[in-house]
Length: 240
Image (cartoon, rainbow, N blue to C red; front, side, top):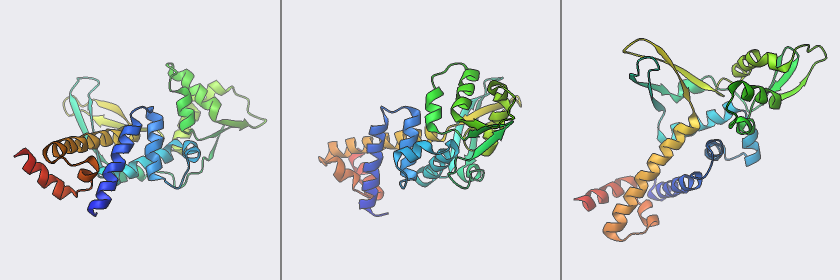
């Protein structure tokens, strides 16, 4: 990567970090997804099944920060600190092959796969069962004449079938505790993982800009245009 390309990427990352500060996690994930899927407009991105959004975020995370994701959590039984590592390639192996919203038939009710707009509509509902029912209502596209069961009675079955149809929509891990052997469930949110990496990288860049601007009087654009090796060398000299 040339210094100019590196500088453009760093400037873009800082702009992305700045713009994302005021966004909700869902909107922030869609902004990040736009970097991975530039061929789609905002409305198309919002209509993508959740698994397609997560797949794009995992691919972008691998391209920008590496293919290994590390998670830290506490054992829910003994409180021991747990760490787990996973490869994005293993997660992406379960991704759907296209962006088709698909249709799932559950006892005569027809459901499309949930998208980001559906998630945003239920995110403030504190009752999990109520939120799940609202999600089903939003995703229900119709029913056959012989559907003789109430929608609320399908919560568990519909949830299972929708998860099966879109495996990356809700990523959950099972982490074994090395101290007590208990298995603790852990949710993996690709948008949050990627945003944490963006925040960390942006902070590092800002610290480098601050140090070199103070030492040499250079502008932010001049500093970001430096290649990583040259910028690191100047940082070493400035801190000596």
